[in-house]
Image (cartoon, rainbow, N blue to C red):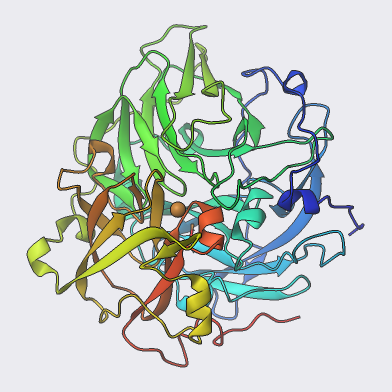
Length: 503
Ligand code: C2O
Ligand code: CU
């Protein structure tokens, strides 16, 4: 591949670089909506599993009309291609780090670690932050697909540079299906649409800028949906299912349709809810996924409906428009199949049936700013590294049920706290019931300012060490991350030593 001159130092420092003038940005709702391509396997593994190959590489792409932007993309795309998998059918993904290596101008080497967020993968395939693949190296990840149908996403998790790598574009969706979901008459195929939301900041030459405001967060003024700035999507007069993922580094969204008609939430991070829930406003923190059905049957041809962002605290700055995307209704013919939302979706999600009385222990997690650092229980990932990766906040047995009490004592910040490996059920927020839209299996909890969220979970599927961290990625990198261990360490579940990348 031809060497690209990467202005990576600007990915670290925005100072002294001028921002792209607002007049150079496209008018909202002029760029057509698009969906990321679906990835095809390149063959099968020795075990007969579908084998995929992804090259992490730099590419120069047109995001803003008439300007070129250098990105890091899975196969050179951002968002990357969608992987579609079936429950009970494991797959392998050969992940090649073909990113340009260190250069004196750049402030970091783009080492990577790929995390499939929402998967109960073994520790050595979970994108453990310190399990890095250097430029020029390859690692084959094995995904078991043993859980319920859900919207997952894969994104970079390289230690201390997760934020930059993800911001440069290393993020994509992964859809897992199963028999329960397949049997439901909900929108499928062309009517099952990913919506990957991110915010970006552009320099005058079209390249990305990165100013994380002293490790507190990055807020861009341009909202991209599936890589397109404020796109416009034409829709038929029927129901659509949107798999909404907030892949921003620091921006939370509070989404609402311009006519304030309720949206029907059918799925959360860990898959289908027991029953659909209506909401006018949908709050979505970083890394959360919500599957939402919007019915365009009530509109007439030519109607324009906006998806707007009303904002959340700490995230309203820098986004002066509140615009996200627009739907334009056509009277085009459509396939009438899968145009329903049944009253019962998946009543058998084990995590939704867990009862507090079954919990064997309560683990207390406090997210707090200490000595200028973002910490969990006063400690950071550096402390985990210094302990030789031994330090843990909890050590449940396999299949143990616990309640985690996550307390935000950091003043005026919200933190989306992600627990790897498990799905959980939110029991309460400051003693009050969870929002209707989060009454489904979750793996990220939005923990608001001065809030305590209690969640119940079962440490099932795997043993070994897994991370827990804030998904405001500048917080995670500096260094609001720690780990827990299920059962014991074994030679077969070491997240760093068990399956090293190769040249
Ligand atoms: Cu989405 Cu530990 O990450
Ligand atoms: Cu945080």
